[in-house]
Image 1 (cartoon, rainbow, N blue to C red):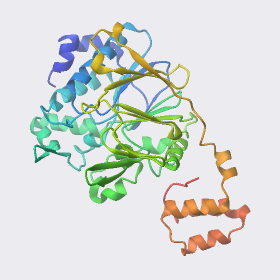
Image 2: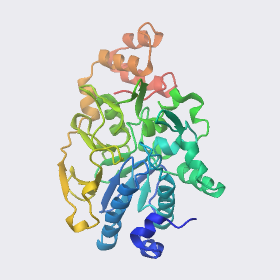
Image 3: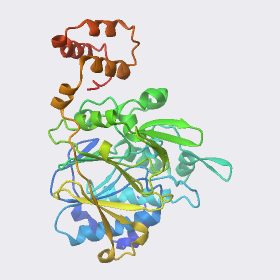
Image 4: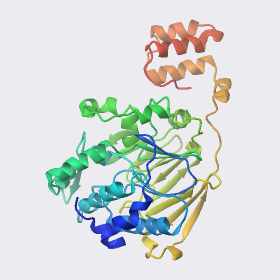
Length: 394
């Protein structure tokens, strides 16, 4: 493997000797659980912004070597492919992350995003520059040897999709995952080269929605939708391991129209906290006015999250200033509360919507005639027998 120019610049030619003792191995395939008392540093959507990568890694490496507690670095997808093509530094980023993964193992966690997925299953990432359409996926591969293309394929194929911490934070490229029943289901996701034979169906799967989100392509851009019901189901499903999921930290939407029940707007200027969804959106890409490095301690009170402006980092970590977010958690996913609040009619309406049924459908007619005390039993029977194929919406 080629020596990483970025790591050499930050740590010297013997960077492996300096980093190897910090290597960690976490359990899980597609879900990495950080259960020890530790500090976590997060960037999202770097898009080959080498300046931001170097600054975030410089801070991370200094913390790693100065502190006695475990320190994790998480990059939440879209490492490659610049959003504004001045000079594509994807190869430098590739050399760096491959070396970091080899030396540090799960101390450095790189999550799969849609730009990484393009290198194993498609679709190719394309951008228009000066009126010319450029296939970034194809152009990046031209810079790699055959051996490096194989390394890239294996690297992406084995990338996790999600980090969960023992204090209830979820980190992913996008989301919420649709039609998912448990965190164990996500951990069992495997790469399939036929993912894009039916792109619309793939985007409704837990895999597709974790890297693309709930998405619609429109003239002039992309819309990502974040709705309470989807987020509620996502947090509930990812609490199946007994650790309540309280906050989702996601990237991906910094350059998309963001649509919620309450508003629609463009971009997130580095970060956007949506309290009614228990959702924090983050972006570190070159197009953001503020490029944030996010930090939190797993053993700190819930909601103590810190944001540092990488443009203001001068490679002296003692002078790096952080702003504090105080996030309060309200449990909106209590199963007992949900069942108490929903009437039979409301449940039927939710089933019709989630299963895309007509009101004249025979299943709807049967459910309307089912006695109240037998209703939930009948619903569970339909899901068990495969008559309903999505995720139970309440």
